[in-house]
Amino acid sequence: MFTLIDLTRPMTERGLSYPGDRPGIVTARRDPADPSAPIAGLVHLDLHLGTHMDAPLHFIPGAPDIASTPIAVLRAILLRTRERAIPARILPATPIEGCAVLFDTRWSVGPESRAYFECFAHLSPELARALVSRGAALVGIDTPSADAPDAAPDYPAHRILLGAGIPIVEGLSNLGQLPDGPGGFSFAAFPLKIEGADGAPARAVAFLDSD
Image (cartoon, rainbow, N blue to C red; front, top):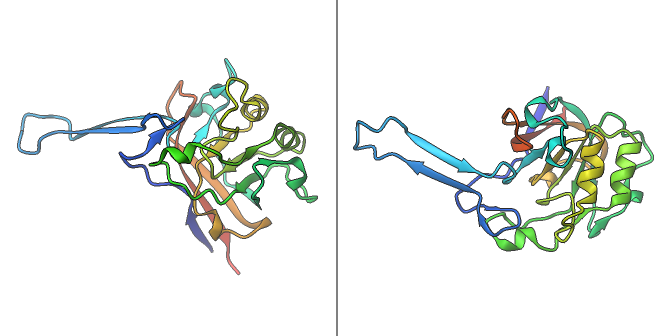
């Protein structure tokens, strides 16, 4: 048995798209009084809105898209930090190969605010390279991007991780409900399976081991 924790931010029409300069989701609804309208609702959304997964195609031409990015339930490691550029030394001495490595930066600003996209913590290039060399299977973070707000056009963490085929889940929430360090829970994220897309909103969950 296990306890399931939802790590997904709600998607609302108040949510903004990166870098916070436009609405991320627009919903059109038919008039219920019009029986001739065939569509109940139509949603236009940014594929990198809220809690979402970046596929390698996001930065690597010809790489796998989100539809062909494997999904799995992975043993997970949670690392808590308040450092702005998260250093490689945060990684534990214990093995991380084949694990989902999640970073809890305590980023509590909601995506309905422009401030959500400003001054957040991010992975340093050295940390991204260490995650690759030590065999991480997936990387997750509670901020809107694995890179710094001013990382354009280089986006080193994205290029390093996605170039190694490691998907990135951004915009996680509720990480405070998970145990620190290695072990104790597993992680999975289930993105929309959209052929040709470089990312998609995902339902991210943790499975806490029973006592």
